[in-house]
Image 1 (tube, rainbow, N blue to C red):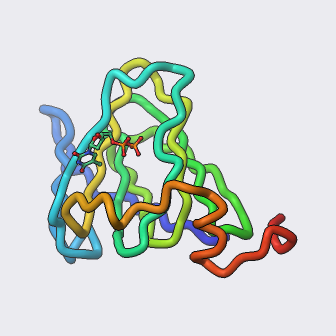
Image 2 (image 1 turned 135 degrees about the vertical axis):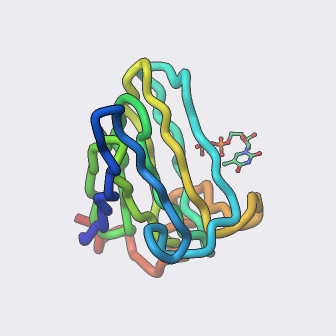
Length: 138
Ligand code: TYD
């Protein structure tokens, strides 16, 4: 399963680092929402859902965490450990976020505003939605 990880351009100088993210230039969609998670407890797994119509870029702007992406057939774990890296998550992908460091701040840029009806929170429903039979999974 292919995953797209962006490496953003840090504008570093003797004062420190700065990363600028512009819609359509660095983020491949119109940014309608930004949210972030922090103070996540060490053993917590967040997410457990997919979206029908939502693109996201996940950036761990401080600390580290891991993201499990699952298209119904295959799973892949991606570590986010650098504030200049972004993981692209398209629609129809089941995602779980875990292994948060105590200082982790996970920022998410999203193509749509919050809409509970866009969520698929049941894994069997997700498999049905993406047309994957349980036997096809690896
Ligand atoms: P939740 O969906 O449980 O987060 P995650 O899937 O990352 O574990 O969201 C936690 C709460 O925050 C829930 O009450 C919904 C609310 N929320 C918003 O109000 N707006 C948002 O953009 C998001 C992502 C969540």
